[in-house]
Length: 323
Length: 295
Image (tube, rainbow over the protein chains, first blue to last red):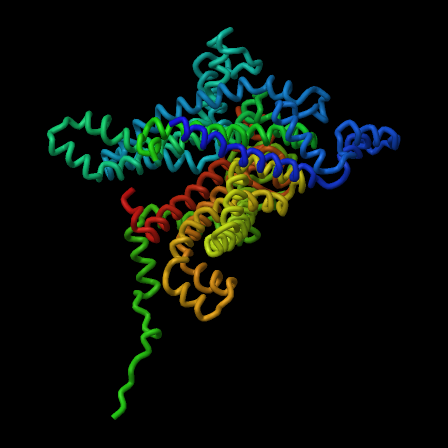
């Protein structure tokens, strides 16, 4: 098992280095001189000394390979330099916005898993019934609907319903309060975005659960379990669901990693100051130190989530562990 | 006495196209519904000039945020622009971005995936690691990073969405091409002295068309959603070009309680088009890959 873990951990290193190289090159492809944009953004004249100082400050006057090695060394120590827009350390900017994004991502996962696995299983067990059709329509609707539009419509519904009931339209709070300080205020702020993101996540996972369960239910060992006279509940929980979990866990892991992408848009809808919104602001402000750090963060989340899923495989399926 | 022997190559054993289409419709009612939606959106986009009742970019300050009526079937936005006309023209933008990104990204992925499988060895290993790296970036994140380099606008949005789609197609096509590489006719082509480009393009590519078509269909929906998201963020298609995502930016939230139609109709257009493409794609997958039927 230790060999398996070590092998998987070592495999993440080349992917991270490759992603860092790609991010580094992408950011160097931005046309024009970033210092010219910074100094003469308003069309004003600038001092050539200031330009040279700016080049030295962000390090673009050094050879590309030196810049890359410095970037890599900084990334290894979680030091991505300072934001070109705010002047604050990039890591401080990200750390301030990370808790809210992480909370929404985790809540969305809880929402997705608690909807997807039971509904996907029921849908497979009642194949081609009206319930199955309903679940499939719900799933395909979730995949086809943009999450930001679900967000807009949910705000609209909350405004209308609360206005009709209380006479005062209710809006979620804007300032983030940690869960342990004021749970009600915190949840009333993050619940709607989590449900919005979770719906799409649930839809994708539900389709996978249904598909995996349909496949497993046709296996010989299920027929054997039935022939032994086991009750349906035991067959589903002990034999079918456990074997169907592998592809479901993979998908949940991959979707969790891609949640950051979904949050970019959802945080904009709900005016939340999370990592996703910071990303959009970084791109809009041409703040490439911040952009490259955020892209690296997303890739790192993806790589480490995949690693966690792979390690979970070993625990779920002993064949993987021993081969 | 001479007898005429029919050329076996000239005999087409497949049923006529019309009966194949009818069989598809009978076996895949949901897919047929999806295809009908796709055709409807395509016709709307192609004949936008003839179908739109108003100029989609013309402001009418006397008719701002007007509710749906006989004059404006879907109402007007905060600048008095007719929503129906903007949605009709938006279909064109969505189709241009969706189809070009999906076909260019898919085709490049097809050639790279088949090439990677054909050459194998070191080339395959390097290409797989590059695909791994690019696929570690969520589509919208990589698209945003590319937009930050090239800037906004329809063309740049197409580039930004195309690049992340390439490895996604290449990965799937490669696995199908690995099987094709081992079949005798590829060996025969090699023995005849054909070059790699000919073997890849003439012998291998046509045989991996099923997974390719399934991927490309899914990509069209993903590209439409990505374009809508980028435009909604203000980093995609720019005003005054009518685009569904752009229509949901700004006004949609600001006027959510007083003029909800601004927020509702463009979203319904996005949802119906992606739904149509997904339903058709699922049916296509079931038809082309019988192993997946009944799942």
